[in-house]
Image 1 (cartoon, one colour):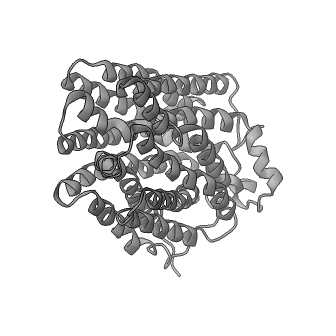
Image 2 (cartoon, one colour):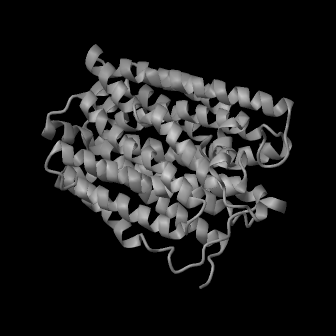
Image 3 (tube, helix red, strand yellow):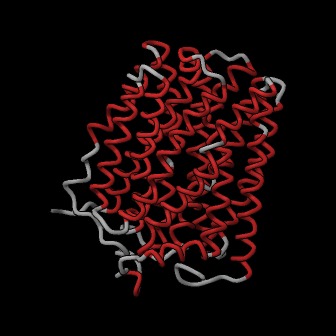
Length: 412
């Protein structure tokens, strides 16, 4: 059984991650159609994301535990199959309860992939190349989200919202087993010293994660960031439709274009810049994160207050560019703030926290504020505040790292 080269591994995992976000984001494109068919308020519509997140974050600790012990390629294959099946079945859901179950199933499958894949990449790239590799891997987020938004809106306009879920979910059913014929890398293969032969972690080792300063500041800043981006990705097209009277197909295309252009350029620029900065400054990653939020938060607020559609779209694009600057560095920070034998567990802990306290609730909270105030704009103003909080926490991390740089992978 032959091994994949690092580049082949990166290409395959990035392509699968793109499918991941296509399947996740298609919901936002067809949300008004679902609301109409099931007579849902904004708060109830936001609950479709809440149940997805329940499946996602509740199962992530299980996959984190398995990912540090079992065959990762089989866990990845199972995750792809389950999330793709859940996406396809969403298109056949006859009741709201069945739709909730299908979206939770999508969350379970995506939890397996998101928990395990970054650690697998870390075992084929050395430390000095790891952030760039992870940056490319996470470029799939804006591109996949954009494709999900654009394809969902286009398919719905021609065949209805149910077909959108079926068509975007089907490719994953065919590609789920793509990694199985190949040998997976050893854990810690690209690390030096004792980290290259990591022991199987214990429960005590896992709990020790939550005493690590860098890990905690990274994750809690990520939580505030995720709170903002999760609600923004669901309500963005609806905001353009409702506030600026842009029709459904055009709004999903515009929002998708913003995601793919701002997200692609922002993710690559932030990742490669952070790698170069980190070589000169031990706080390079965290400084990139903090500064990105310092610019993104006011631009997002301006977007929601913009008097016309052109100004709103321009500010949305600028806000998304800065928001995506930190996509690669935050995940690199999480992986490099813990021992090699706890990378899957660290990603699982991060996923659990950022979704339990972040975007599990934010789409529904924005929806409820919108219902209560009769203004979606007022609900969306929660999001720049969350971005500012993320910038503050990452700024504290940058200050501490700059004052007291540490060596090694984990600091107590």
